[in-house]
Length: 114
Image 1 (spheres, rainbow, N blue to C red):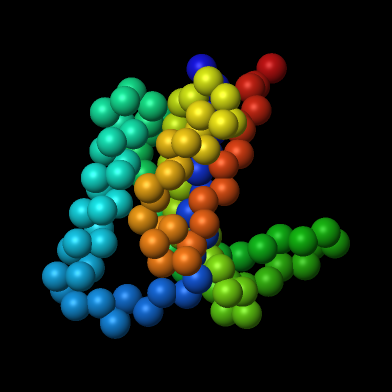
Image 2: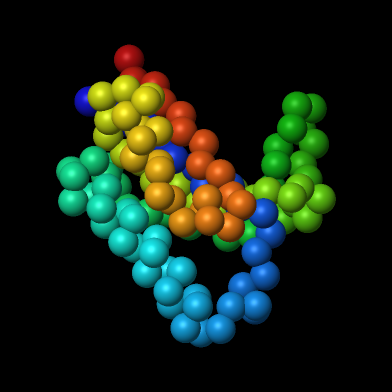
């Protein structure tokens, strides 16, 4: 099996529009979805959420600040899964709660170290 990273991109979500119960339900959907992947023995590591702060280092030593409010989609987190192929990893991505809020999941193979 190979490792694949699932990167969760979501449009800006105003969490203040969720009631506490809606937020609890949304978080449970994430926990259930990731728990389902773990139950299959396909989760390689814990869930990682990203804060909204950040920096970008560009060529020539140029550093810019985040968050990147001009970008409609934000990278919100990632997990690493084990799968036999990119297609199988993509199948694992189905059901991700980010998709229900017009987000996306980017599936990328992790290169083996040599």
